[in-house]
Image (cartoon, rainbow, N blue to C red; front, side):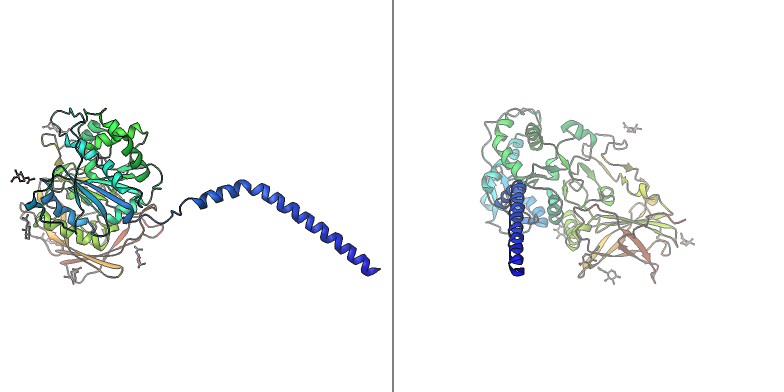
Length: 468
Ligand SMILES: *[C@@H]1O[C@H](CO)[C@@H](O)[C@H](O)[C@H]1NC(C)=O
Ligand SMILES: *[C@@H]1O[C@H](CO)[C@@H](O)[C@H](O)[C@H]1NC(C)=O
Ligand SMILES: *[C@@H]1O[C@H](CO)[C@@H](O)[C@H](O)[C@H]1NC(C)=O
Ligand SMILES: *[C@@H]1O[C@H](CO)[C@@H](O)[C@H](O)[C@H]1NC(C)=O
Ligand SMILES: *[C@@H]1O[C@H](CO)[C@@H](O)[C@H](O)[C@H]1NC(C)=O
Ligand SMILES: *[C@@H]1O[C@H](CO)[C@@H](O)[C@H](O)[C@H]1NC(C)=O
């Protein structure tokens, strides 16, 4: 009896349990159906979250058979044979003597398609603008459905820092529509061509899905804009028709400047350096070297720590009441006295405008700028990169004193060192996170001729402030 009672109780219990379990499962199934739908759809799309790397970029370099033999040396500075992918587009085949056979350390060349059917009416402009604008279309046709995520357009005198370009683009979801680049440094140029235009020489990055659509419609757009000057203006106009706006990245540099651009490079924004342009039109980056040698020298620093190149660090030498501004891998400026930080972050006008006829003393630039003394004796002591050596993660760079020709002051060894030694750590993963300027310390040095600086992350509450 007891047993019977127990078993019936058990049966009922089991029955009840299984019934409620069934109900529960049914409910769960009903409730979860929309969720399971999204899950299946996500699973059926390709697994994409591999980080963007160099192999996902396809470069289109605008050149001509006339400029290529000279400019290819500039490309060699940054191109990674076997890793970077791209094509150099020419207007006509290279003379057999000039081509010198196929060079596998450079991207292949290709002659652009004929564009004579398109109208061009900009007075004094060059109709090659149409050919160059169509590079994006020709690239998309070549790319097919390979794993390209970004099309990157540049001139044959655009120099890219590839690690930083890849890092910058990796911040964006390449499956969306992105038009990324930089403006001109000159207000007037942006007024003329548009503040919303990515200037071609600085490099233009277009996400592949957008590039594919742009390629489809480009020819129909081109006929509407014969009055525009350049290829970049045509790309901009067509993207505007597609409803896409520029995303400005401060690491892209059109360099619409002439002369000594050390001022610009000494106060780079807190963003990785992506590109430099027009290097044939400016003074050699390091004095006492021709531009070819100077750029090789610059790239030694780039290759040692690409994330840190040109990143500006400021420190105050309490003992001697001096201020230091380091533009890593390039130049160190040493000022007497305590200078206000915000003044150090504005660009000294060492250069002139692109248009020679223009007034250089007025404020025509897109950044905060300040006068640069014509009296060389009134300038800060300047030290240019001498050598760099990269250990496993510790990096050392030396900067040697530059002497102005028109300032005969004899350097005072106790006041002005001849060599500045800077130690730092490789700058990792700066891209994508909000960046913060680093701090530096003046280290004790046994020699008055040598100054030692260490760059490091600032402490949480640390300020880059003048010493009282
Ligand atoms: C190629 O050679 C021809 C004939 O010598 C010359 O007229 C032309 O300017 C050359 N083109 C280039 C791009 O050097
Ligand atoms: C630049 O300087 C290097 C070394 O001094 C020299 O070999 C090279 O020919 C120079 N290049 C030019 C274009 O003057
Ligand atoms: C250049 O601009 C400055 C400041 O706007 C002005 O004082 C100066 O007269 C101008 N010079 C010329 C030659 O126009
Ligand atoms: C920097 O200069 C010091 C002193 O001359 C030297 O010992 C050191 O090896 C140099 N470092 C580099 C990276 O050249
Ligand atoms: C060199 O610097 C020291 C220390 O500040 C100073 O006493 C001396 O007058 C300076 N000499 C010259 C020639 O400027
Ligand atoms: C960069 O990474 C290396 C190796 O992980 C590390 O030693 C170094 O401290 C890092 N640099 C910075 C600035 O954090």
